Image (cartoon, rainbow, N blue to C red; front, side):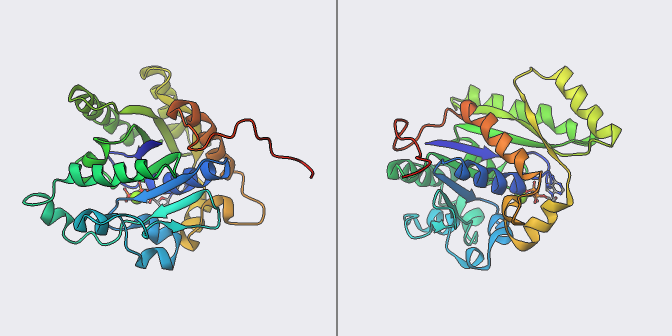
Amino acid sequence: MTVLAITSQKGGVGKTTVSVNLAYSLARRGWNTLLVDTDPQGSVGLSLSEKARKCKGLYDAVNSGASVEGMILGTRLPELKILTSGKPHGYFEAVQPGIDGVAAMRRVVDELRGRKQFDVVLIDTPAGLQGITGDVLRMADAVLIPQQAEPLGMRSIPQVLHAIQSLRAGGSALEVAGILMTMVQNEQRESTDVIRELRALLPARLLLDTLIPRDPVFIKASAVGVPVGLLYQQPPAVAHSFDQLAAELEPRLRLERARPNEHEHTKLMD
Ligand SMILES: Nc1ncnc2c1ncn2[C@@H]1O[C@H](COP(=O)(O)OP(=O)(O)OP(=O)(O)O)[C@@H](O)[C@H]1O
Ligand SMILES: [Mg+2]
């Protein structure tokens, strides 16, 4: 099981959009995927369903020490499950005197590993690198860093990379799965210039080839609570960006099936 955190220093760069749509693409590609929301505002639940919003979730498990069993929600894809954030009350108050945030998160992740149910766990985090995001990064295997393709956005990249380096120096095995350019506007010179500059500046492997375009379909999809691939009968072209992202990340994340079945082919006909 690979634990992938989706994290950025800046807010509003598309973390939740990437988490929901990447989780959907990975599940469509056959990976048993769990999408975990750690945003106290519960943004995955908000963008997904009424039922998901009301459910117990991660913070309830963390605060009470309870198992996440019974909190994991199914979706219309058997390979995609969701653990919402639940009620955050108490986490931030409790974290200083009582609960050790890292230990509490580790217990939940260890429980998920022990279940051997998931190939990949995607954790959508709130903006910034402190608090719950720091706790998640301390036990994640890899981090995906969405980055808005605009000049001001670039400034946060060194900060994020530096923070990851410090975690690694402190013994964490966290790997950078990649920096993902989001809200790319091909017709806007400033947007494409940023990507060109970053390609020249950063080590080649760091910046992912996949680019997520800016498209009104994302706002539509989050308003009705679905991944873009489910918005219409025919998935819009941008849905393909997330299939491409999933394919690009699979080898980087060294995904392994919990139950290998590589000798089993899907039959075209019975
Ligand atoms: N590629 C895109 N094209 C157009 N709009 C987008 C795109 N990605 C995200 N958005 C929209 O931008 C807004 C912010 O996106 P999102 O909530 O995914 O960001 P975030 O990084 O999770 O924000 P926060 O830091 O507040 O958690 C949302 O309204 C979303 O629908
Ligand atoms: Mg978000």
